[in-house]
Length: 234
Ligand code: SAH
Image 1 (cartoon, rainbow, N blue to C red):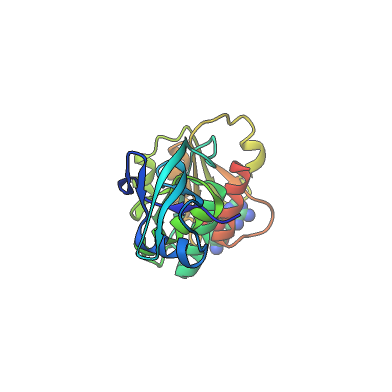
Image 2: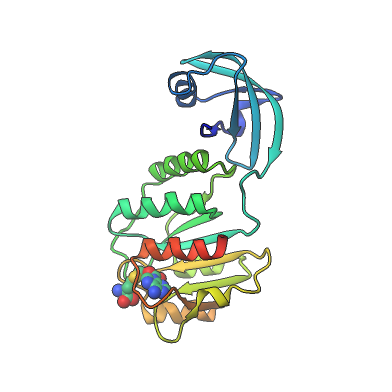
């Protein structure tokens, strides 16, 4: 079975959909699809469609929606990850790809005391996210917040359950801390390579975050983010 295709909501008019150029090329060159074939198309905002191809050429693919469903492949729990921006961009990008596959709802790159990186390449991250959404067959592209400070993220979050990943002795294991979660919104904070400063952990705690650990080994930040998300979402 092939991957899903992506077309933003603006590509749909009633039952008719015109695929974006790069998706049309993919349908024709890789899939070698023809009129009459069916493909699955997601709009990145929760709508999944079974589409019959009416016209297939590398420069334009037009189809008709035969069936529509919402939130195919989406988890029950909404998880936001605040992740320290990493010095190595490719490590942050790896994290973003895996986080999408695991079902994250929102990624907020964090600027903290120990982050050395000042920005993320939002366009690139969005492309990575769309590719991952198609590949893993979910229907929503997670939100990507602009870089925020920890205080900004904490002030703006509505998450009922909040955790800061922190491999110190006062932290509790993440697993048991999650036990009674039932469809609530979750916030996970993960530090950059240099970790969180003690004052940041204190501020997060004051805002309701529970310090949690992920085992006795010190993980790379992106591994910590993937491990924590796995624990919450699987
Ligand atoms: N040099 C830092 C380690 C940073 S690891 C220090 O000594 O604090 C980067 C981030 O990954 C940490 O800020 C934390 O959020 C997360 N992390 C890594 N290993 C972890 C573990 N065993 N438990 C919980 N969080 C961990």
